[in-house]
Image (cartoon, rainbow over all chains, first blue to last red; front, side, top):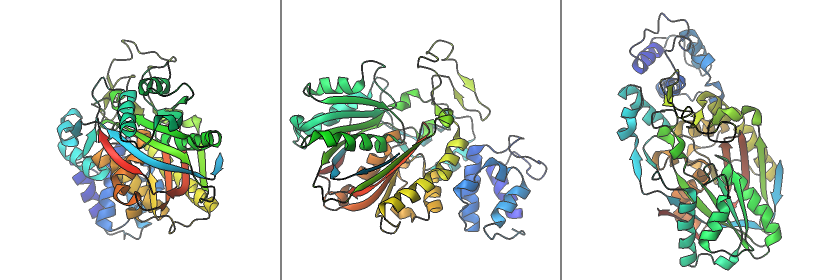
Length: 78
Length: 355
């Protein structure tokens, strides 16, 4: 969880990603940010998130992002 | 629609690119996003240099420039041309057809069949399919297939979704008959007009003519500034289309052709940006080195011309003397997506010219 928050903060340092319940609705991540986020997580965790899973719904909250990377074997505690 | 052709080949490719090179760095200040975000986008999407035409350059100018080089160097003779096909998203005029203008400026005979096709990113695949069909009627004559764009002129320089990847190019391919015992060519095109608004220029046609009102700039929810006269892209929708609809087509065309992914030497796909192409390669489980993704970084996304640009940039030193099993695929505006499995090479010429 911490690594994901670190990546989000690096991506958009002006926002607090621990308080928002919907990053997309709250205007914290747009489609180009999601692309950057995927690229950064791919690199950080050594995975390749499938193209068909790169949809806003999978990146709207910390829990959703964590659930996504978990599918690629990334442990909860990251 | 599925296609099968016998005894057809690409004889040579010349890609004409504008001399004018712009870089992402010098344009970053045009966008309403922080420098840090823009630099990250550069790395992920592969933005680097892109080739942009002068404000008064049209597709016919670059096409005539390139074709005259082919004629003057004897790479093809005027009287060998039986048909001139133009696939573009940026014709010189609504009327007359730009292919007729090119025929006239090149001094080709009245017997040359000219046809414009308004298509975008799948334009090279569509153009080849039309050329292969026409060759059934042409015997020893060849098709001059011109695929190109000057669409940067319709892209807002303040729209970071579209302008960083814009690129202009016009590619000329000689398409011809060859021995009937050559390996068959398999192809398929799919279209979905229900998603036509995913990539469009809202104003400028008969539905919404250009006017002072359509030229008014507005800012979208992501801070991009453009008018109705500019191209607008639903980035997420286009991305999902490419990742969800294109892979089954590639799997199907290879199955039809009786080829495995391992047997294909090169996957030469349209290139909207580096990230999308790499994700497509990963999704298809194709090694990234067999599916080049470096065209946007060096030239920009030149719509239908990215596939021949890809061939000229990545295969020029190999393709003049070798033949490869290739899978071509174009996808985008329409929405339309298509693929071809064929032998490519040896080509008599495969090169760039600067206009």
